[in-house]
Length: 117
Image (tube, rainbow, N blue to C red):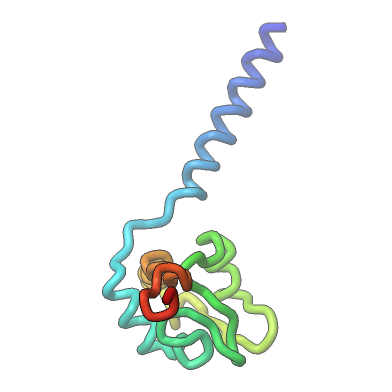
């Protein structure tokens, strides 16, 4: 019984530490992320604010989780170019992700005075 308890504690400690590491995004710079989003050409398919277009899906204001976002850049599906770590280092990726997460949601029709008359 003691062995099972100790083993359970070890498993919980490992799961707890790995989960918190995955959930936390690296410290990032939103303004730099916006600059990188434009300078690396992301806006050409995803729109200036990540709103999406015929060429690329919507990325903001609620992007994929960071690990999925990173995986899509490194090993893209469909017609997206590959962004290796040479092209977009992890710090740059974190900055672009921060920009995507800081774009505010669009207002609803009820919140727009001109349309709510």
